[in-house]
Image (cartoon, rainbow, N blue to C red):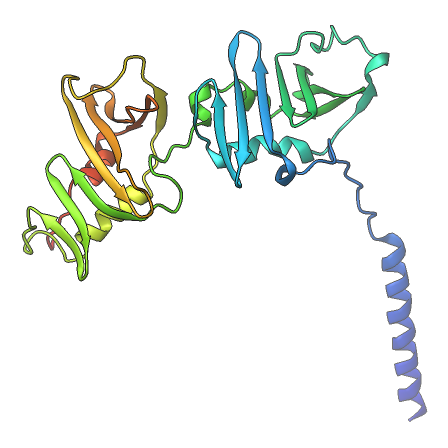
Length: 289
């Protein structure tokens, strides 16, 4: 019995000593200092100035980001959030701006300047070895992981929302060049009526969902006004719940794919022909092999 008690005592001592040793030898957490104390959720206005390119300005209104310069459009929220990630980017080496040669670091005439509310970030040159970029904010120069300048140098159209329809859109009617759908008491009314041998009963809902989630491969700005006289142009009309006026898009098929053109804003959402086909016709049943 005494031997058993002694073994238990020794085992307890080993456990305690092991815990103490682990506590003393465990790695000390690395302290990470973010570039700024501002969070992305606090930002309400973004301005991007680039050497030799048009400036971009975005504002947040009722929780939604919109581009207001160089032209108005809903903003691509995911792209905006990725860009605002720079606010919390962990800093590497940093220096007092007064103690370095700003011209040698490319900061006397920065490649791009990002202004978030009243905070200004100036992006200069990059180090040749570890590809970190010099970024000045206030009186300090920081070396950051180089993954934000390319976003700042993007085209203005890249900041536009790739979805033709607004978020949470609820479609009540859809008029396509060769097909019309309207929401009825018992489901979708389709003209012309689909053949049940080639189309399932849920085909109309699949088509409507394709429009709700449609995302273009590119957003462009058309140069000339779009009206009903444009050659080869079809028209699409979409009625959304809660919207008095329908949305209208010109439909233009060209050598690069299919474009949906908003005649009011002059924006064009470009889709591949395969993606556009899913938006313009009911999906057909796949025959059994």
